[in-house]
Length: 434
Image (tube, rainbow, N blue to C red; front, top):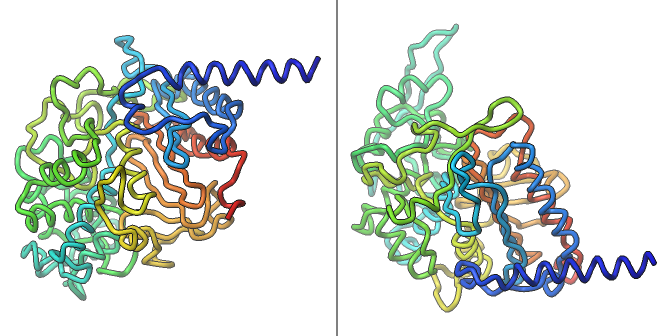
């Protein structure tokens, strides 16, 4: 009886999955679908992933979530949980649109490398070659004895394009002791969607402020990629939005990826939630809440944090990288360029055990020392609204998880849990085959 029940249970799981697999949603048709077992995943173990994600919703630790797994170029899992807007009762859908914040950085980094391949940029170029305001930058000296006066010293060398891509430019988000200085100039942190001036105006203002470290000294996470976004505008003669649309998202058929949302797509934008003790509540309408991505001035295009997208759109972008810069006959980059981008460039300067940082991506160098599921060579990043993604070439795997939490409740990491549940669902390891 145990064997018979197990077979029945397995057939039930397959039947339920088949119904979802061919539900006919347009976004799923943009990439081929596959039964999990056909690409080395377990349907039953994916049910565990779904149960765990639903648990976050049931405990009100997230309002809604979308999860997607690509393996061998095929969607083996695409599920939505909870609500896009809990208060109005709008259910989360597979094609919900999310603020992806720092997941924008990978798109901007690819755009930069496209210009490098065209000979219009070089990694060794000083930024000042394209943005003269960076000709003479300074580095902050922290105030002593709890003071508030920030002094500065001249930078020891010019900031290069490579420094910006690897976040070793010394440019922060103006946090810590620099916060007041940066706030006074309205270039504090990563949010530019409410600005009614072009991003170039903000970047030139940023160039006049003291930075957190000397160029090349250490990894400093901050507005480097926003500077790159303006470099793209200067070199291409287009706005960043136009370049991304015409050179990346339209060719890759990423039809729901935008810097500002077309008004007709307003109903698909997931609401932002924020921690309220052990649960979450709907965030307010300010910059770090619902924001200005629909009704804002549509003027400032942030290369570091400005895009909105869907799980399926972003998966197409990642699959392009996994396939060496090409997807469905559209080539954006050479395989050797992708290899260069996803290789560690800064060694110990990154400061995270078992991991390095390439040209726009964190890279796993040692699985054991990193302490995360994955393979050597896997690369990825995430966004401020608790979204995450990674590409694992050894497993021919792409993982994308979208939600809108800023911040999540203490101790809650939907993104880390999603990664664990993806790898536990693998029953045929690509790494073992190789």
